[in-house]
Amino acid sequence: MTRARDRLRGSTCYVAGISEDAALIRSLLVEIGVHVAEDDVDAAAVVAGPAGIDDLAEWNQRILARGQAFLPVFGFNGSYAQCGPFVVPGESACFECFLTRAQANVGYERSVYLGLRELGAMPGYSPLQHSIAATAAQMIHKWLSVEDPELPGLLVREQFHPWNRREHWVLRVPRCAACLPAASRGTSVGVR
Ligand SMILES: [Zn+2]
Image (cartoon, rainbow, N blue to C red; front, side):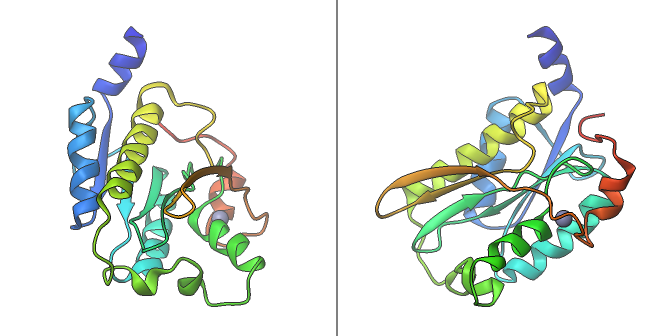
């Protein structure tokens, strides 16, 4: 426990986004002892804004290049809220791997799949908003304190109706252009 506490004390996280969801994640992280900062961070949670997927794809590239852990978060879109996959460069699927796999099962554009066209048009649904923010904060906390081996690739989706919460692990797409360089380095670069 002491080791986890020391680790946590020396780690920082950045939460990107100006939405209520981002503010909630930020305050929960502070409450559980995670140092939230803007520079030299070990992990980042990025809440999808109106630019949605393109924004997250850009973050994905930037963060993979820096070797930080990265958690994309999608606020409630009228149907569900989601966070993940938890991206650990060199170890797990990245956000582009997730999009590739998601699109392999459906014929629509990727923004339609995630319901992001409606994002921002829906009034926040407080219970799911809080619930997904708590899940995101807990994932970041567990990574920074104990580098939980279950986290890389984990995706959590909470659906409004019928109410359920699903977890699954997104696998890397072997030839993913975004994370291939990190994967070929073959080293974990989580918490330093
Ligand atoms: Zn990838």
